[in-house]
Amino acid sequence: MMHPHTIKAAVFDIDGTLAMMDKETGTYTALPGAAEALAACKARGIPAVAYTNGTFFPPAHYYPLLADAGLVLEPGHILTPAAVAARALAAMGYTRIMVMGAEGTTVPVQDAGIEVIAPSKTAPRVDAVLLGWCKDFNAEQVEAVVQAVWGGARPFAGSVAPYFAGAGGKRLLGISGAIAAALTNATGVPVTVFGKPEAAGLEIVTAITGARPHEMMIVGDDPKLEIRMGRRAGALCVGVTTGVVDDAGFQAFPEDERAQIVLPSLVGFADQAFLRGQDGW
Ligand SMILES: [Mg+2]
Image (tube, rainbow, N blue to C red):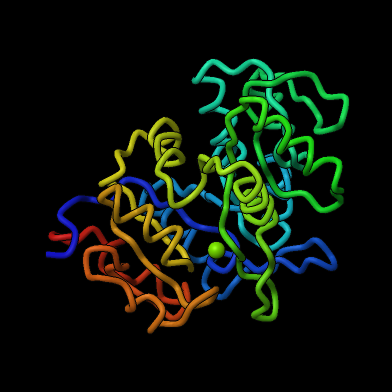
């Protein structure tokens, strides 16, 4: 018996799992079997949530991008670490934070009712800073974030993953992880992370679907992100080798931290026993 619970929600990673992004064109291409996997969940009444570790865009921007690639998610069923962070920071009582990030980070923070302060020399005092993906940043902004933390602000990030899977098998740099490393290098203060492999996102999945973490199936290409998050939470973890690692990369972890199932792609996902609802899954 590999997983004793009926699956009541499926949480799919996006980059390297459902789709690949082409950074030149800003478009997604679905990976083989991805659309069929979402359809199989729907047909079985299993809500599917797409939880990316990227914060290029606010969640709302992902729906049409993925739909253009043939991947249709229900409203409210796409999560980003920035959205998870915004919700958690609002719950922690922050009303004004410095955000170093593009609109993928600033929009969810504003939507959570928190005032966003841009990092600059003239920025007012803040109690927290949040790092997200950004493309065009400069030394003044990095220094403003460092100064805020020297001044006592707590540092947070959506993700500190070093890289993620891009089109053509290319690794793409995790910008917020790079800035977090610079921040900790300067201040000695560790950055608190909300994205994967932390489990904060699964609390939102529970709020959306009613499924508890051990009733979820987590599908992802990164053993250090999706699989680590899922195993800690007691979920059924399915690794796919269409992203950052091959089968050996998944098997390189101790048994209790490893994906219970590793698939070469999402082709045939619909035929897997865990979706057919057999006893013992
Ligand atoms: Mg991925």
